[in-house]
Image 1 (cartoon, rainbow, N blue to C red):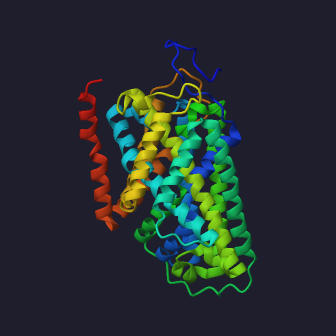
Image 2: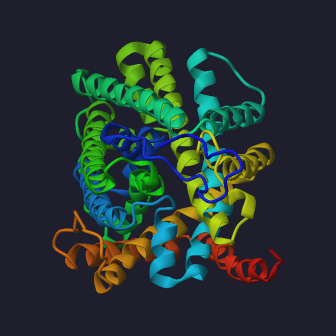
Image 3: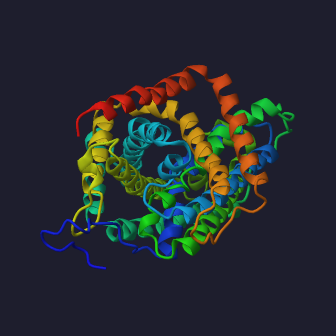
Length: 442
């Protein structure tokens, strides 16, 4: 398949090329999940659980729920191995308006906000690793966004190679953290358990756990560029999720071995505290570099996946038409990429992303639940194409996923009604935007 369309030809518009192999897809899954969460979130989970056992149970339950979601996405990816991921599934099952609201939430909150926020986190940890104090990280965050957009302008291979390197490095950072934590002697003796927390409180602790496990869906967003997607996508999702769950559980064991449950709950930077315990300030700077690399990889894959969703929306006529085109040579969604980078840069410069992210967590998991629900529609409308992977124990696993997500989200809304309410308003604002957009002349 040629990289460019024939000069002056409009009969065959430029499409995506399948250039990613199984290793690339697995690195997308792992890199899309592991960001800064595992380095920071365990402390907040410890504050919401009563013992080390409950801490590990929360991460184990979260891993099982995420694996169930990944299994459902694996079937969806084989049924619709095209760019756009969940947006395409929702469009098929529930219509364009529901798909647009999903994409709207990604545009104005989830992806643009997370790219802005995590780029800022990258800058702060990179500065800490270098021993530099920055008066204002925002210009450097913008430079990071522009740099990664520039790499991804040159197509999926350039973005994927960058992702592969960053993901291997972030796994190495986690491996070092685990090795140091499990080998350190003189850990504090375990404190007397505070008693089991209520199921309601435990459900509340699961939301940040699920947040740390989210992101496996990026491989479905780029399914149109994966070779043999019917075989590759399920393998990448299953093995990638299992690897992440193993890393997360071992990392929590390392935290607990060094800090204990109470020390973990009191820590503001548990990864740095573990490394500092083993190697002093040098260790803290090493893990700061690891967190910087991990966050940079997350920004990169978020940019890759989101741009393809917005490109499909443009092709459907519910986003800028120009965003629906691909670069004639590099086959990248270059216009969608520029629009996404611009939105993220604006948020990074204005510093308005923190509250947006507080609003987005509930919407993010509700969006994933809606995508998983499309599996019931696909099962009732059999495809003429061969379906090479089916979610095991259907319909039990999708139902379990939906019930657990509904329970966790409901608990979060009960505990934080303000953030959840604003998140709902931002999402529902997509409805009038959709109908206005459809009325505009084309």
